[in-house]
Image (cartoon, rainbow, N blue to C red; front, side, top):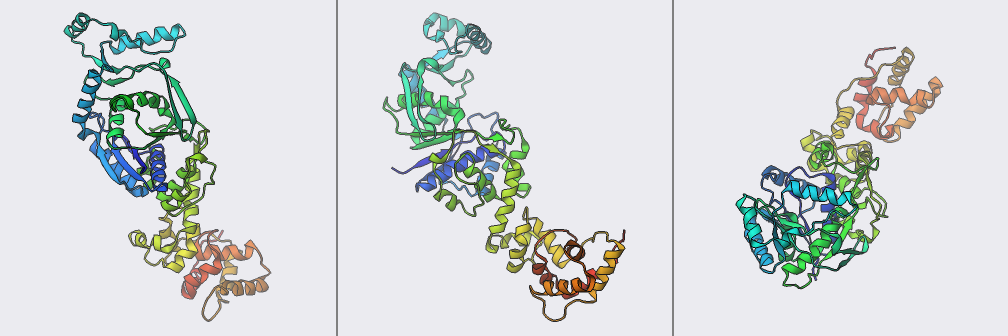
Length: 454
């Protein structure tokens, strides 16, 4: 059996980090098993679904590298859902209900006040044809519920292990609203059957849905069980252990991309969050897939920390080869960053945009810090003892050793004024690596500047 999974978002907003984790888990599972990854847009909510979100969602997935093997839109399949509804009505598993939202809310409150679970009481099953007609004469349109059969629903979950629900503890789910709109429970089951999905991997907030849907799968499959395996992962929490809010714009993939976060930094973090595997930067999705295993996922909700993502982004550059970024450097106006330069500066990048700053430091101009009168005298001495000949990685050591002997300076008092004068910074790659890139002429010009004195 070929593994086939689906990622089925609703195009009602931008893709967020929690959605991205669900998509990544499905993609990695499929590729780990040589399977098929389907993107399905659950866009039956025509009022809230927007084409701009559908396009943005596909752009974000492509940016992450989560390329699909097939694609479908639920809005193209209403005829199929109409047929499924008629089949369920014919088999007496779908029945009309006429309660208003206010009446249902009143029932729930009464049940809770009595200490009873807020489960639908199936009052609509007792309605006579005349009573139904009376409701319809009042202008009420029915919503339609799927009648659950008694008994225990069981499945083996790839993350949670053995799971079971007694149907007496579940409400008959609404599959069709009074306005005729189909709910997710119906459309997703129809699609999962029609597209031959083998594994449904999603968040643990869908566990109860699964108990209901297993019965619906059987009802829509000529009363034969459908061979689908489920896995429900814990949901992401924020750094403080609170539930992630989908309304946080900072967690959209679009915002993270615009802030300079690399797609493989996101993939590297999300693939390991909530697992027993270490979080480390990874350059390819294939490498992540080769180590992916749902058995490593914990039942403890993982915490997503943007600071950890930024740190991982920084670590990713430390292992990223030049070939992986050279095509992007032109658009960043960093044409002078050769493979040799990249190897030296990449460990100091937090985003790729930092390359422009380092090109300016090495080959352009910048504002020097303020130096004390004593340090200015030291810099004047330093320029008068610049080494001759070809500069290499030994030049810095030879030069500073000579200055040490002439001035008795050592440590920061020796190195820091030189670093600040030559780079404008008090940190960065080793100066023995930078000095040959800056070169004799630029070094001389920067040391001969007349910066402000304290």
